[in-house]
Length: 134
Image (cartoon, rainbow, N blue to C red; front, side, top):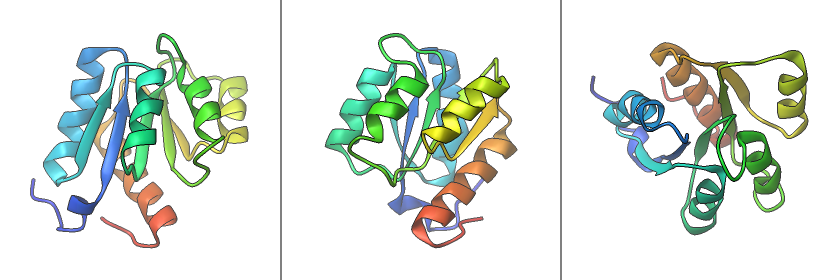
């Protein structure tokens, strides 16, 4: 599927300790022309955010070293504007409440749906960058 030309300027961070899940996210996002950066845990994700220009991030909720929520909490200390989408296989009201208190853009369920990921990512980038992509 060809991209619309806007995507090349966007860098998307994908953080998940599960290699298959991380590759699935990359396979959803990369064909549209987004630059993808991969992290296997929350600590690695934070290092990438400190070193690279990132326009949006998808964090798995359950990762070693730092969970998605913990990484989001630390991220907010130095980057308030980055839209972060949390991904989880076991969402519940308490977890979702915590995510939104930390200004997560959205929480989406695993297994991920290609359409849900792309729609959520497009809306997040549009909201924070002022333009809709798809």
